[in-house]
Length: 321
Picture 1: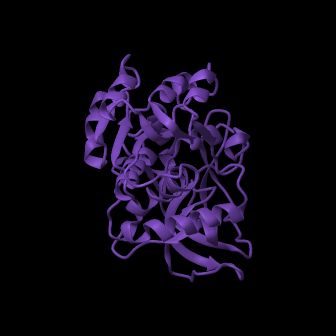
Picture 2: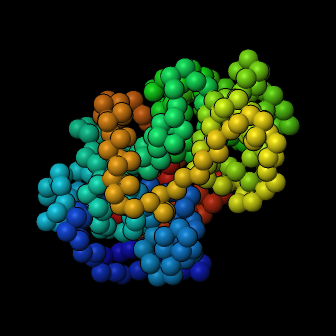
């Protein structure tokens, strides 16, 4: 089969052996692949993102089940599935049964591929780690990404009273209100925290899904309410920065870090079960939508990665085997 693997120069397409499922796995013939920011690191062999040089790249896909392990529950050959699992840049990939979901009737493979990581990540960030309550003010940073767009819609659908989205690009920022944002701001504006405070009656947001971190972190705390929560799921603005401990202490903010990279398979299964309990009727009804920015053939995976690295996309970038 054809597969994208990591190299010092980024993803390369090679001939590879078809993966063999473990007893708890399903084997999937891939129909559509969604790109994620972490794929850029793994494509260059960054082991912190799950792949060394020569290892398969990717993390999100949809397709058709062609083999089912003896201990894999809930799936049969021929099922249409969407998965949050490594090695997606390929014609075939395996997934633990607990990292796979059935594709709702009437949903295309392309649409399904845009959803798994965003659904699992944002439900965990908003509900489990972030403890969102109905009526609260919520901010999603980096909201023009596929994950961010899901976050805006999910917050609104699960009862947030006021939703803020951030994007530094004016054209992309203007689209955020179509996906649930009541206020869209740019973190490059000197007064962006004041815009958030004014819109929330001077209180600030109760919960932030932080995909920026870096130099923005202390400003994010300024825009946060007393006893607010900030859930760190990304570091687009940098891995390290000055941190204003006084704001953090004075507002008694919970700053929470999460990642799938250090979670066990049992923890990931539990995240998926909780997400589906809250959201599956909403997903099946097509109420969470992610626009597809651009589609590339798998053979042009590097072009897709370059487009993501340019940070000019709105929504998801897909590869098609």
